[in-house]
Image (cartoon, rainbow, N blue to C red; front, side):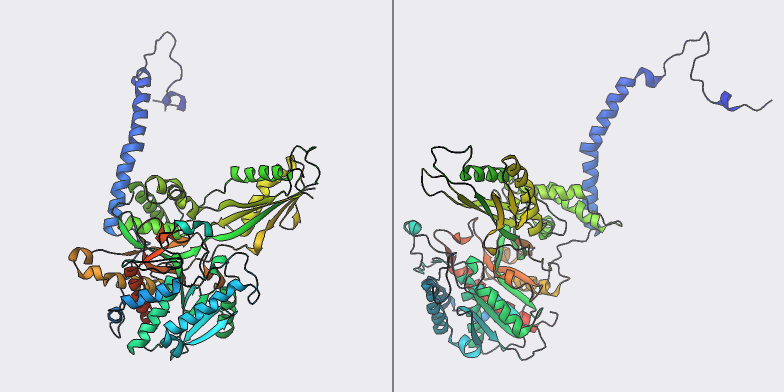
Length: 602
């Protein structure tokens, strides 16, 4: 038999002559088969895959395959003595100290003149005198230095100069009380009234609670005679934080750097986030970073003239069109995988009972992708987390409207506009100021380029020449400038895992103080409650923006629990602080000072 050739082995594509081919089963049932295949794919996508993902999610969590990015520090307690016992019987004294501080209206204004010329600065002399009278041991044992007249530095010298100092900062000034709002206050805004539960008045929370808290802690430690620092403790009290720290913190930083050097500080604690319940779990959320800042000045210059013969657009009309263009093009939010906000979500997924299931799956996919061999982030899952911050956090009631979006994106707000002098005269110079808070994922340079990209084409259509940030963008009519010399890139992000000795020490102290709170002594239910440390960011800026050169371990945190969405009414009517919260804040400062002193890891 001769071997078969290739053609005889392969099936013929045509039927033999005279034969009639019968359709096979697939051909006869092609439509049914297509429907079944489509149903299978839908089933696989919506049922089977999520089920398998759930199984993998539970399996990897139970078998330890996933390494949590939110590992918690063990509580840390002072070894040398029971620091918390020193606070017993001190509540009335603490209330009196804060009440007296609130009574001194240390308001700071955006248009403050030079010290010695503008009399509004003089109130700070009175406040410094009050502190000297109230804290005699602090002024006896710590060296006080006036910096730029009203900013204050206190140095509690340690016995070992080889150890980097601890820096605790705060600010003496408060936002002004608008005269038109005084009638809305339930209590005198500068009365420092105590109703048996709360201390009322401007600054009771922001930030006289902070400076009174730390000064009280030091005074009580000195009074006890049980503590003498090994590590130097520095207190830096700014005088104009509410207007940018251009005088107080700016010169405080120069003074500290001149004496101690760059990168000379072990840790810095300033005002900031506190304790808050999220997803049914209490968190402590120190801000480990801050958004950047830039005030944009939009200025239009046009020819004047009589308004009886107007052009199509006056300067006010032109600037209105440009503002409208800006608001039509809001800055797109962007969440980077290394953002502290991803860390906060990770902590919620690990511990919070009411954490959204879809968000838990997304953060676990991100963590698993980073832990895989290729280490490439799951962009789709990360985008889902970003979407939750932008919209989901409001829709599910976790955050107030707009807060989540502001956390992950660059915001813009047109806050000031000036132009025109006479109703029958065309305005020759019109100015608007737009406030920007720059996302951690962006920069001043990127923001400026986006503004040019948005406004440039509109100005071109209006036949307006553009000068943007000192450069001619198009072939004199329209100017973009930085207002108030205000530009600031986002802050460097401080370490926020327990691999960092600084974060571990902060977290351990916070959890130790929470575990020994008075409520924990009253019932087993309270004693069993946990506090989770998680990183966050600040959408505003504190005095810490002046101290970046001193340490990378900057934490904006106050051991104060927020009971509502209004955060003790800071910057508005009826600001207050609960007396019990003040006691716990001082107890925390005392424990933290001693724990840092005993540590040799930072």
